Length: 552
Image 1 (cartoon, one colour):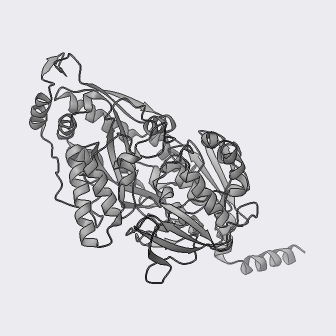
Image 2 (image 1 turned 60 degrees about the vertical axis):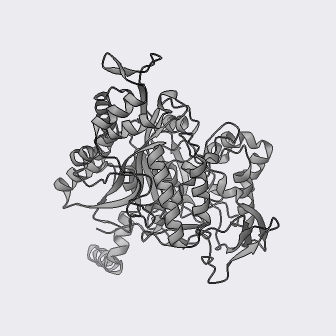
Image 3 (image 1 turned 90 degrees about the horizontal axis):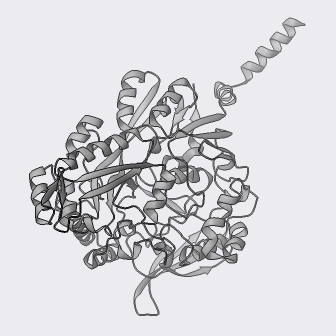
C-alpha cells in the first residue's frame, strides 16, 4: 500500500509542470514603499504613492509604456487623425477644436457593473465642477461636449487643437457609487468620497486587483479582482507594506519580510548603489533614467523670496554637482529646469546655473540684503533672510540633501530652517499653499508634456477653485501663460520645440522652482521576480502588474 501511495504521489508530481509548482509556491507578493496615500480617490490630489497602488486597481484610458509610446489601456484603439477617429472641427465660436471617437474595452467594476460612458460623463462632471477639489481641472474643462453613442462608445469635443489630443489620461470614477455622494454636496465630495469612506468596496476597482484591507500607516492588501477582463495576474494577493524610513526598508528586504521594494518610491539611489555591490548575486539592479524632477518650490507670496535675484542667488549657492557626485556617484544628472535632457523638447539655450557663491552674494546685495547680523543677511527694514525648507520625512537622502543645502546657503548669509513632515501633511501644505517658504519634493512627467499645471497662472490652487492646480509657488507671468497655451496648440514639431524653448527660458530666469536633479530610479529586483518593467514616466510600472510573476 505504501508503495502504491508513493507511486501515486510521484505520478502526480510528474504531471505538474515546474511553472505550476512555482506558481502554487509563490502566489502572494509582499512589496514595500515609503509613503501612505492621503486619499484613495484617483482624481483628488497628486501623490505618487496613491498612483502606484491605484494603477493596480484601475487604469487610465491611455498611458505611455516603457518605450514612451502612447497606448490604449481602457480604449480599444488609439484615436488618431490618420485612422479617422480624431478630427479638427469648427466650433460655434469660430475657433478650431477637435472631435475624438473613443470605444471602451469590455471592462467591469468589481461589483459586476460594466465600465461605461456613464462613468466617463460623471468623471467629467466632477472634474469640471469648481468645488470638487480635483488635482487639476484644466484638462476636464477643455472637453466641451460628450456625445454618447452607446454604453461603450462616445465622442469628445475639445475646445482647441492640440498636438497631444489623443493622450487621454482620464481616471474613471464609478458613477453608480460616487454620483449620489457628489450630487448631495459637491463641495464636500473630496471629504466624503467612497474611496475613503468605503475603500474596500469592490465596485471601486476594475483593474486586475482590488483593495481588501487598509491599515493606515502600515499596510495595504490587494487581491485578484474576479471581474477583471484582461490578462489574469500571476499573484493572488499583493501586500504593500508602508515603511517610511529607507534604512528600515532595506533591512526588511534583506530579512525576507519584503519580497520587493517598489522602484518608483523605495530605496534611495545611494542605497541601491551600495546594495548592488553587496547583493548582486540575488538581485538585478536597474537604474532607470526618469522624467522625475527633484526640485524646491518657492512660495512667491513670501516677500523675502519675491525678488527673483534672491531665488537666483539661492540656486547659484547650491553646489548640485558636488551633491550628485558625493551622494549618487554622479548617476543623478543636474536639472536645469523641469524638462529633462532625455525629452525631445529639451532646450540647451535656457540659462544654466553653475555653482558660484560669489555671484550669489552679489545678487543678494543688489536685492537689498546687504546687512549682516550674526552672519545672517538682513534688508534695510531689518528683515532677516531666514527661510523654512520643508520636505518629506523618512527619506534619508532627501533629508541629507536638505542639510547640505542648509549649510551651503548659510555660506552666503541665508538662514534655512529645516522641517521634515509626513508626506500626507507635507503635500497638504503644498497643495493648499500654506507652506511658508520652500518645499522640496519631485514631480514626475510624461514625454513631451507641456508643464501647464505647474507653471500656468490659472493653475494656482486657491479656496475659490477648490485647491485645484499644481502651481504651488503661485507663479504668474503672462509671457509664460502665452507660451504654454501656444505650445499645446502647435502641431508643427519644429515650431513647438521653439515654444518649449521659450517656456524653459522664462522658467530659468524667474525660478519659481529651484531645479536640483533628474532622478534615476533604482529598481532593486529579486532575480526570481519577472515582468517588472521600469518606465521612467508618470505611468508607473504597476500599470502592468498582471505581467509580474515569480520564477525560481
